[in-house]
Length: 251
Image (cartoon, rainbow, N blue to C red):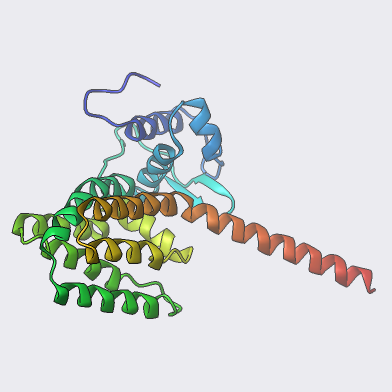
């Protein structure tokens, strides 16, 4: 790949490179692109960066990501058809990790018993929501916003609200979170309990560590969301094959 222009991230460079490959005729409509692991090794970039590049191309309808199968060319880009980039789910979560970690530390010094009780209630709401067939994030969102409000800083509240708003307004974010929900990735209660325990102890350092640990785990959940779909597809295929052989054995 060519040198990365100032300010351009590796995933953006890879996305532009893949568009060039498609435009050059290397691939045809319906062709399967190299696997994610292979692209990561060939271009010496991280797998999250490869995933971000693929999501950017999928948003624009250039490729289609099929669970358990890979990325396929959906249409060939035109000469002037270059990918545009909004904030990705990985970028957003990285920003949340940095920002909300410090917000949690500040909240630990100001939070009231009433706010602690409200966070307790939200964890119970999350527990109930996790039992529902459809993945929902209402209690999770309110949990993080409640911590922001506990900082007593309106700038922090506005920033955290905007970070959550971007989850649904950025096409790249919305698509990857949609895939995560389809893979049944749900808020992890233990991670939220650890944050609450640190806030209850009024321990800024522990609150920062717990929040950063939680959001680092979210990045991992997003990375493996589609892989979980692939694993499930493989399990179904194996189960189907076994059932077919069992049926044949009884003929």
